[in-house]
Image (tube, rainbow, N blue to C red; front, side, top):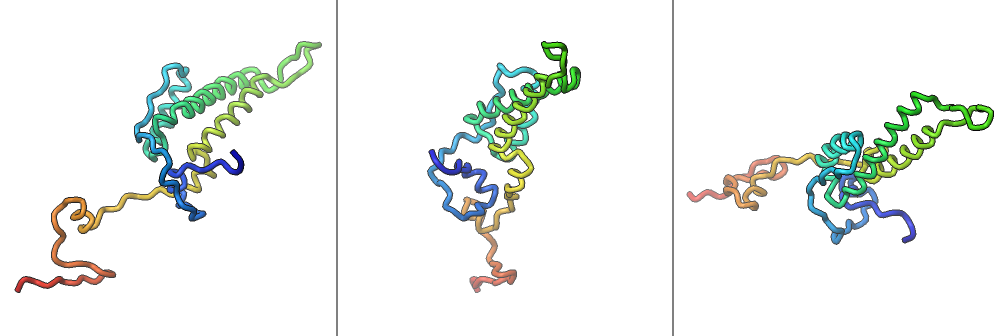
Length: 173
């Protein structure tokens, strides 16, 4: 597939559809259920899963089909933490095999690789400052009396508001 990778419709809606291109009405819509944490994740990855799933679930940005991507992110996070601790313990330079000359720590490569993997997943879910800046979350508003009526509620009172003015309807007199 050539060209830019398409942005999911949910993210385009949250961003306000800045390009005003038509939204994909036929995009698959997985169930809006938060996926369960995979059992194979290590304890650190499970902690990160629980932390991030709360936020993504609250924004409606995660579904069961996203489980593998979230597991990949959580796993990359766990590797990052482990390698970061190794880097802190052993330093950025370690003794090499030949004549003990200093070489870069292998932990540094793991940290860098994990950060790149995490960044890819974070961008996909709108979890970096720049990708989040493009999102616009709609705050739910109270439905009008007419919207409540259309939804099966009681009929609105006999007056109507137009442009802030109250207009009375004809009475039965």
